[in-house]
Image (cartoon, rainbow over all chains, first blue to last red):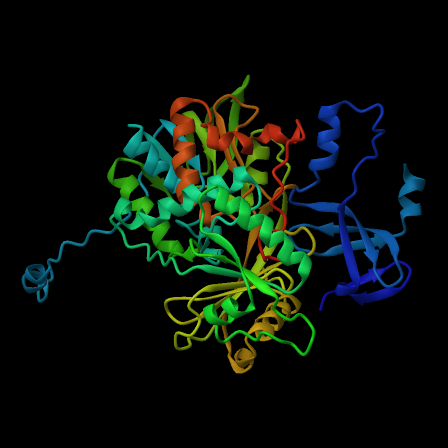
Amino acid sequence: MKILTCPMNGPRNIDEFQSFGPVRAEQDPDRTADADWSRHLFRAENRKGIVVEWWRHVPSNYFFLAERDLVTNQVIRTFDASERRAQS
Amino acid sequence: MPLRLLKYGFSRDYPVSGDIPATPDLKPSCDVVIVGGGGHGLACAHHLSKYHGISSVAVIEKGYLAGGNTARNTTTIRSNYITPEGIAFYKEAVELFEGLSQELDFNVMFSQRGQLTLAHTEATLRSFHSRAEMGKHLGTRTEVVDQKTVEELVPSVNMDYGGALEILGGLWHADGGTARHDAVAWGYAAQASRRGVEIHQRTEVEGFEVVGDRVQAVKTNRGRIACGQVLIATGGMNYDVALMAGVELPIRCYPLQAMVTQPLKPWLHTLVSSVSLHTYLVQSSRGEVVIGGGSDPYQLYSTRSTLDMKEHLAEGAVHLFPFLQGVRLLRQWAGITDMTPDYSPIMGASPLENLWLDCGWGTWGFKATPVAGKRLAETIAKGRAPDILKPFALERFETFRLLNEMGATAASH
């Protein structure tokens, strides 16, 4: 079983987690044109390389972020969402 | 045949003729370049050369012929989908499979033995009624059956789990079946190459020369080919290849895992699947039980297998057929599925004028091989998509006209 390190709960089996896919830039639905809204809804990052994704530790309902390589499946790091907000 | 056997049986001079010629030198230009030497690309090459008089076609394959998802699927053929557009399309696929061995003069071992999807909840049964009515309306053989009929169709299935996940009924699809996946690709390849189509194995596309809104040439590791039209039919690599031409597809890649058991005497005469257990089984003509299809729960470009997914599939299989518990697994594998947001494929035009798409085949690609090939050849020859393909256009995402086929399969996605 693959182990994922939760920033709050520490290393746990990956079946305790749920993937919510790559992080998308937030859009204001009132100010976004239809074509851009379609992009926002339907096109997610899928390039071969490293993605930043939302994950949830299901038992504790804790959402966090992970950097993962889509080719090797190596998790580079996991971190709390506040870290990303501090960067942006 | 007996005369040839007598003539050549003890001779060293038997004229060997392979079905598929060796990879020729790359020509500097050709009318149509098909990227991807799997079932879909080869089917399109066959239809272009046989029905549209276009035989200046190069099929470019990074690995070996039909070694990607054509080799990795679980060979299911069926048309019991949800949307009228989807059912009409897959119905044509089933009809083409019915005549495919004759069409290709190659035995594709099409076995139309019916598919039974099991319902363990009232909600599933209700959705089956809707699928059955839509299927009947469009002329496919799809009906809801009760517990007694399920037991008659598959006497060995475990109907009762002590109150949990009891089988309440099923969706019986008499049109469903299987075919030998490799033979489908080989048959198309043999026919196409006989009509002048060049098949370039071990030839990797490295980029596209795009000028304005046209692809002028395809760049490969063996050289450049100037092209009139290009089709992308690369299965799990569709997102990646389209991106080389500057086209970003609404696709996310997930591995889909499957496995086969050791050979058993024939006992399972239909395809059986369970939406609740995310498991489907079919006994191959060799007696092996093919068990699929577990989608990994997160995006990945790796064809590794995982123990937890195999355990999940085995659990579902043993749930339905408890006597399989001592049976050994013989092989396991995974393929990269290019999943679209609405679980329907993307076929037809791209933002570039002469670049055509045969993408977004996710977990439903093999069954569509003949119809996708036929209809995309028509699209390329005429320069526009026929009516049957129009609902599957890439632009449906921009106009929010999605074709929702989620739940039309037992694969766990």
